[in-house]
Image (cartoon, rainbow, N blue to C red; front, side, top):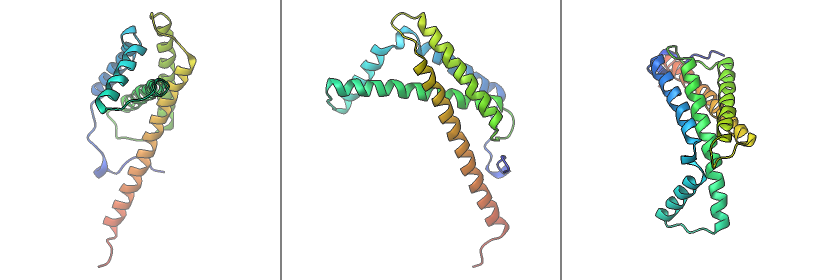
Length: 172
């Protein structure tokens, strides 16, 4: 399978420093989000405000469940973004190609960073560190990379169909 998109479907390439700057900025954001400032009370307040603005009233048990889901979704999302940024950084300056080795390296780096993030939380008052959260973070990275893989596969299929239509136009 050719993992390179045809020329006419490629997006302009971002310079490597842009990818790396975004990746480093996001890793700093993840680190900052694991401080006391962004703990459970902030996410509870945020969820409460969203529900209030939308005029939605829920029981305490439902609020607790929604809050739990919001916090776990945040783990998936922040590490999914991190993995995609890493993937872009490691391939910066080259045309986009899906490479399993690069994806594996990105998943490993994201998983390792998740472990260091939980280690950091051991020393933050009001925060707790769990391996479950690290596993969830790694799952977020893997899910995002899987999404990138499928996006690439669909883009390639569309490009091949488009190229085939140009090469042999349908008879009218």
